[in-house]
Length: 259
Image (cartoon, rainbow, N blue to C red):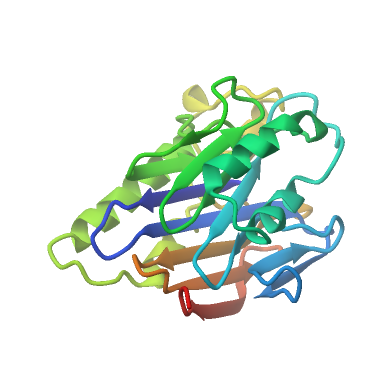
């Protein structure tokens, strides 16, 4: 993923509310969300390296990875997308798993990784000296930097998620995924004075500053919304897009929960 916002145990109706965009080169082959045979998980698949950007299993364990936009930009080492199926293939608690990832973190280019189960949500980036840590209940945002780095597109999208949750708060009924998907189709770019400086040049920073990116060679390939209830049941929806940003296919799955 390249931009995601999430609410962890922030509502009575949901353990997790998460929505994010995957931005990628259009030429890079990928398969839409589906149930993998081994390990058994629900995720899209990068057909070049074999991993994924977001995955969940039938018990409601989940993980999501973003790359870190920091030099050097050349590809190096192992694929970050392999971390998600590795977590979902086992039963290790999220924080303990991220501590094991830290031991081999130098094998990967820059990444941030979120992993969660029924009891815990943990975060780790191999560009963060703080190391792996469990996250308290709350609303968070992650893009191609460290958790909650205040890039304009992140803060705007996180604020909109909080507003959506506040509007639903008087009636603790399950949210619908469609309003979540709409949060991430925002094409508004940041003002030049608010742009981060990540070493890619002002024009590219400007182009990458919108939550939804449209480009001939690179852009937003899909939006994914994941809702998990306290009992592990839930729903996940993925909407994919054409190069020009038009919505294409929609994948929708329900999760049965443990047992």
